[in-house]
Length: 222
Image (tube, rainbow, N blue to C red; front, side):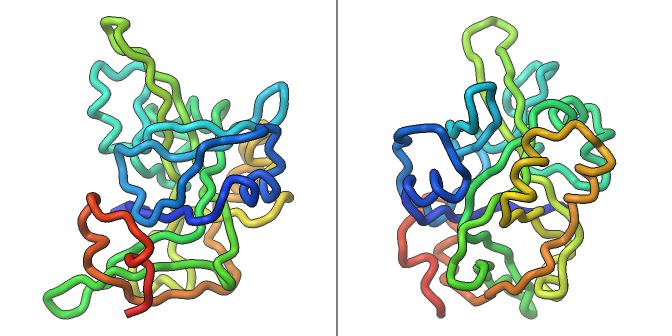
């Protein structure tokens, strides 16, 4: 089973602009507390004019897909095979991206129930989820969709007893720049490793189970 299936992005645009050295003057970004597959997420890409941020649908739609619904099965790409799978190979080679986040959810099995847990970095530091993106055109030409997938890797020591996978996390410019711009598969693969820094993990309300819920109360410690 892959993962991540929900995340949060709770800081304002100016902080994102500074953290990721964006060229954009403004982007209408509202705090989000329960971002789910199929929704639009803010995505950072490298362009000839600098780094830009734009909305993309979470759930990658390969260019050859006949139906956009395939994206719901493509929310994650495994680090071990992202450079080989037909759905992801081209994007991994040419269209990598950063997805800003301040935390993500995972569900811990407890007897017969599953307790949602929020995972953040100390002091709620912003980070990037490693991603890939694609442009898809509907067969009838009625729509063009930009979509993305989050890359996952093996769980680190903090998450091992909750889930066997975790998203690839980048926190520094030394990771941002090569991921966006470098064309060296062997080096890129070295970046796709479990995060080895400290993390904060705590239980939150089961209201997060519903994708209709999206408010600050979701991230309060139980």
